[in-house]
Image (cartoon, rainbow, N blue to C red; front, side, top):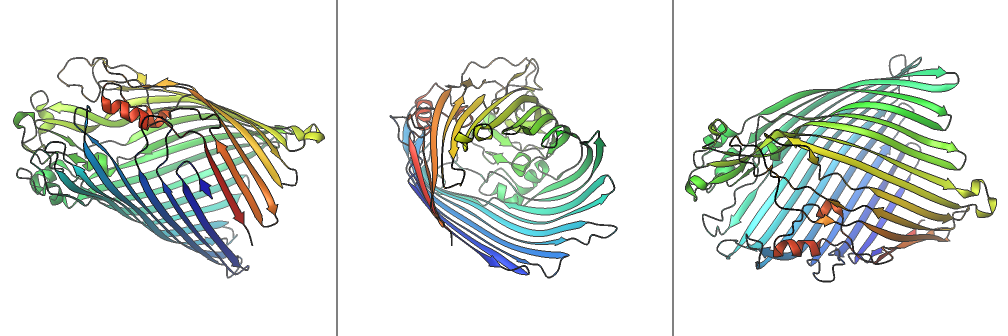
Length: 580
């Protein structure tokens, strides 16, 4: 297939075969492309040239009716070459060009056993062991922001994960019982180098300590089924218990090339973090009709602190600014982010020819992790374990609480149900709306809009599918409301006892837009199928809110970023599938 947006080609092959005892599948995919073109008309997207290879092999051995063994190997590798402008610290002018090569690799192995004894104790048991390795390597040749001399920066992010998962199921009368257990260990490494180091003002330290984490979890659930006047009704209580423990490793790497930072001082700052969370859930399901179901559910959620929040570090080993020296640091005393999620929904066929899926939700969050500014003069208690060369820190903390509410609905009308002459004609309507606000623990703060919540979106589509599925086409209109993220002073709040003030800067307002896409397919022959489409038919100039929401408007770099962020104009795709 070909995509004009980034001039990319995709070639793939899938081979599968076997019998009831032994079978397997091989999948290979190759992609080659360039930068995704924007539609700004003033600033072209930065050049890029990339390619990727993906491979999957899976085999199944089913020696009898009780056991099915599945082994899987997957591999992915992407290389991207690009160059882009480097700006000065004021954002007023460029100081040179950075050239970057990025390598992303991932491979994994798994072995799974599906056992269906169907005895008095168990109906089924599924057990899987797995290993996954990931790499993200960036090589960048770039000018230094102070001396303007060229330097090479290598930044890697490598993980190795081993894990075990098992799930059990048993039906006893009206009870559908299920339970499970999982365990995993993950090692994270952050190799980093800079050569040559242009000056003491420009030295970049390893951005995060190496770490190892251990996770244990288990769950039980009971679906209790009832018959209420010939309507299915179910109550589904459940609980999940999760424990995670993370500790830093190789702390001496953070002190490398620093004249003031030692391994012992870093060890005083960064230690072990562990927590256990009990996460209950409760769901009610009721079949209004055999094809239409409504539900109400509550679920407790948790997000453990990640390695970057616990052991992230920037500028910690520097000592060139005296009492003005600052650093960004992690926090091993972080609590787990938690959420309470409530949702009501309806899904299924309202009547013959009309399907619907709708939901209303309210989610509240506590212990949101963000960065807080402290100074040694105003907050000496925060500097007990901070190296003496640092006078101002930006430290990860459980700073905010938030809530998000909203709803969504999607419907599909098949007109052929009522008018045989237009059998194959259908219409899709969808609408999504959500609103969110957050508030920090700072004195005088108030709830402000949560910038990570997307604006309202509506979709209207009309499609025609030949009843014999020989061909089909669809026209889809997408409408997105404009939105402006709200700037705050939370990142720069002084913590000196005074109340936080409103921000004086503004983010760009991301305008709303409407866009048309046309797609089609044609079954040319029994084994040959063509599919393609033209996207953004009217060549509309627009921005994606979630990727553009934090662009400011004060500097030349801001204006350049705004132009770069324009999404693609009119593009087209064409693909062919050949089955043997």
